[in-house]
Image (cartoon, rainbow, N blue to C red; front, top):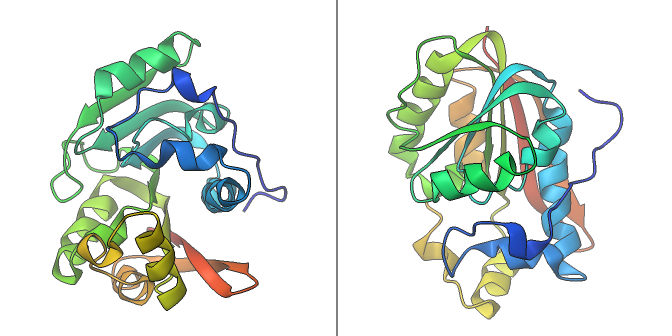
Length: 214
């Protein structure tokens, strides 16, 4: 684990190729809520130990890419809906090469043992509990021996459900697995290194898991 927590490096908001009108990109720039959004990503980045190749599942607009470029030789990305070509071009203009494609974590088009790290930020909660096993099996397959899986997921709390509702989002229609479902299933496929929570005055709101393939 890195000793110093990294600060999330962001481009000016209008330079990103947003996924769609519902992309949460704008929230990262808000005065108060933005700090919370950035901290959760920074917690995930702090667990990434670097190496040759990283795969980010659900890369979205590429918010992590400026940071990941400093840690890995190759940045790969897999996303169901993100405009892969446009996102890649955004970072190519800054001399950061990425290898981004559209695809599903349940059936990934990569060879066995290809990645040092697989990173998933706010992705796994969208899978149903029965899909988690397939996702973790695929992640384990594409990781090299000793490679790491780092994920971040929201902590299921009534306050969070209310907060998302105030933002116009029915979280229950999008989140199908809780942080407990995810960490419990991950232990069937990986060795747990650390599971830590982002805490606020209202209690834990986000959980970051760091697991290793042995």
